Length: 269
Image: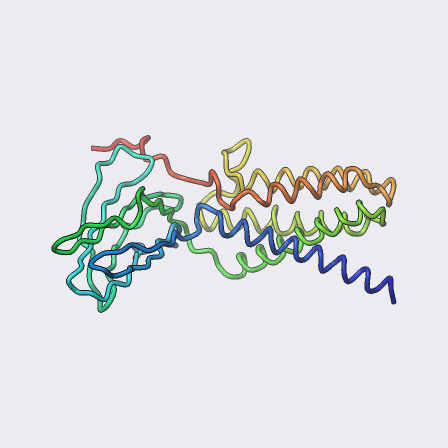
């Protein structure tokens, strides 16, 4: 009974650590919406500005502004590019002001900044422009397994690290960490990348995508840990190291240094 309670407690601990990592990564990533509040005409206007949008349509940026005496405009330009900023008026639709950011090819980015104005005041929603990245639509059959299996891989990795600390057997936990990491990260990961941005792999040596690179780093550490554990099922050193490395790399915000089109390389008029 005590052994069962201990096992359950350790899995719960591993689950809590994994969930905390996932939440942190989600809240700090460059695709997480920017939220805030500004005051104009003695009214507080809350906003949520998206930074990722699936093609094939313009990205609607909606701001709830019930006061019809308040209008809005937005400036935008592709990035990185030599474009000049384009300014357009926001469209009112009921209680919302809407800015439509022109769609771009997959991995194309646009910087935009929204300004609200009344007869007496002008307020920018953000001090600096927001960058939105367009992507292809990823089907559910690729997206859902990727998310679930990567989460399971992180859970197994964390539990394996705890097992290493407590001098428990690490073989099965290491094996399942490696399997789920391969399936979720190295099989479904590239499938998602292909649908979203048109490339199977954009990490080293093909590019600088940290999502691909951190998956590769975690895989290499766990592959070597598996070799060590195969020889000694109580091996601790490399299992613990792989677990810590996996925790660190998955704390890196998702999509950092992700795929992007360099519009400066185009022959612009």
